[in-house]
Image (tube, rainbow, N blue to C red; front, top):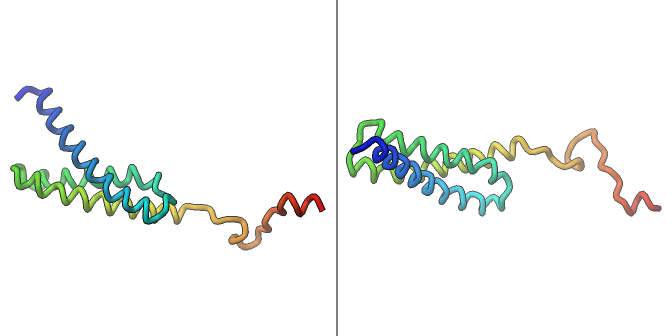
Length: 113
């Protein structure tokens, strides 16, 4: 097999693993109603690719290893998606009404009166 063929073969595997990482990310984004889903997307794809590639690195390099790497990529995508959503919720700035010591800005109607 040529070098280009090997690169295409490996890129195909990463494409499949990242596609499988999109499935749990989509479910997590729907559950979270989109809050924090944008930060979770690259984490889900990276985790899916990392767990997918960990199976062949562990020594399973035949067809069984490929088919075992598919659920591993799904699991990695789910872990990455939920971790990304949890991280974005921790980093989110709460509204002024919920922060102690900060008064909320008066509304426009209150200023006119």
